[in-house]
Image (cartoon, helix red, strand yellow):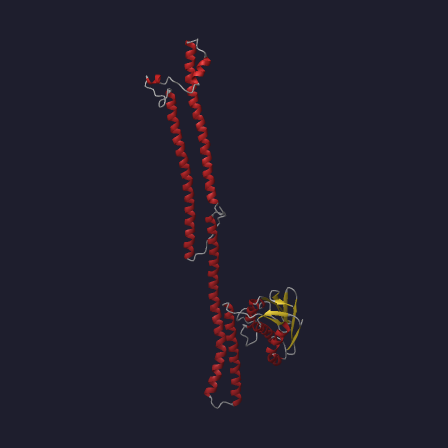
Length: 409
């Protein structure tokens, strides 16, 4: 009878009707018996009184004995008067009482069935209204109308069904809102991608046109153009690869090949990836931490994520400064802290630095605003978390934590 409180109520109502009707029937039968008994006793009392007054020699005890005999051999005497004791009543008032009680019994039975039918019809009507309401809910959902409020607090099966429909409505509403938001994000992303591609492509086309229009262009100028073209094409290649990688994360098609990697070796690989950039900018990488720390991860992906973060710190560090990378492990997590002493990030920009294509006030002129977004996606897909703190003019600190389900020492 789980989740059938409405049916329980109806059954209880029927049970109450049955109890009331049974009680009434017993009271009525008792009343009928007393009425017949009183009628018989009144007539017998009249007969006995008459006999005793006219035949004093009769003994009252003898009369009572005769009245209580089970068998009688003088039944034929009544036939002389056309009376059949098996069919007819000797007392006419009993016939009147019988007819009256018969009417009462029929009326009581009809009343019982009327009450029973009324309760049943009210129950069916209530169920029909609930089903009609559920039908309206579903029709509204088909019209993409998610403004539904179901305030039923009962626990019968239809209320449970309405509750599930409401949950489905909330889910569909969220999906519709997310779908709209995704479309708007896609529109903005396409606009950003178009802008990111347009500028370097335009520069490349301008320099190519300049070299084609002037075959006798100076060799030094030609080399400068080719170097600039190579730089723009390299940037485009990084941008396109980053977009493709992000799209793979969005589609959940990235499969990590987990392995135990010493954290010191992973950070050494990051340092090698950025050695040229560090030399050009005059920035030193200082790595410290526990040599025995081990991280269970996909080495290639995590190296790329950490490279993007350290690269951002190097680009915002002044010449002659250092970027400090410290790692440590405990029973709960493995932590990697990357800290620079550069320009810092303003309070307005800080909440947005991991957003795609976002470029803060101090972003490099050739920044495309996608490196940190890709790094965050890689780290979170591997079960890690990334935190950032920054003080303008003093520097920025990134902390990456991998929980103990992904690490061990």
